[in-house]
Length: 380
Image (cartoon, rainbow, N blue to C red):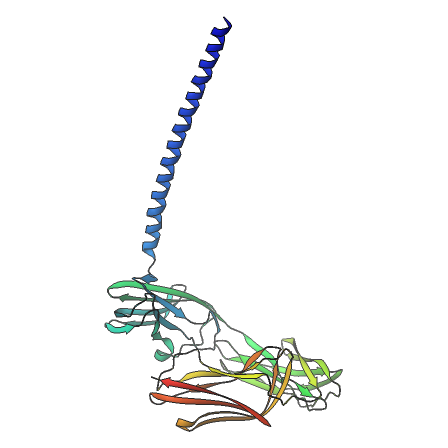
């Protein structure tokens, strides 16, 4: 009897084990089927989304280069580049090129060129397709968000891209002073007011109060001043400040208008004597634009501090020359404040190379001793 009961228990356990195994198998089949189904769905979904991406077509890509934020009085600078992402040189044809600037879907500017253009692009290179500044000077836009939309047919296939930028309107006010002053040197600050809006504004200052090192001077005004978009106005203190001790001082300017008061401030550094040594200084000449003959290109002339200390520098002269075209730029008595391992652009100059060829740009600083940098360009 006991052996019979034992046998039945064993059979019951085997039956339950078989049922569990069958259940696991069914669940595995369901999971496998679901995974296959999910992969298929994701594959078609990915290809559906990918098919809508027209910013890259057949290894070509278009890029829009411009600032993401500008002031209203500034000219809109927008360039369109075609990029070849393939590792070989290619011929291409552009047709039905369209460039638009829109605000709230309303066109602000339209450019359309419907004739085909053929050209060649090197491997992994980019070429300029469109430069807005060559077509129009677009500025004084109202504040808001704008969209640049570009589309074209490249070898018969549509490729397009877009870029959002914002326009700000503001009346800027700042204090203009030297980067530093020596002990006992005359300090004559200026208030600079700049109209960065799309419309003419009228200013009605009644007083401008200057405070530095516990001394206060006041200038009184009785007239109104009109400022067009992009225009600046300078209000120079009629009084001279002097500081006879080295240190950092806060200069405060309070402007009294008929309809309100504004206060701005700026720190002034006062030192014993400026440095004239040119050791551990480097010069650099560069442009972010494509250089081609006959077209104006902005070049930056930069000074770099390779020292771990702050530098208060004084240059007798800053000279820039291009011997081939007899170009010369010179400015005297230049003060420069450089942070540790810092740099700054001393000047930005618009340069034009009249014909293709080789040009040398010479950048020289004179502080008793001199340093110079020569950039050689092969201009197409």
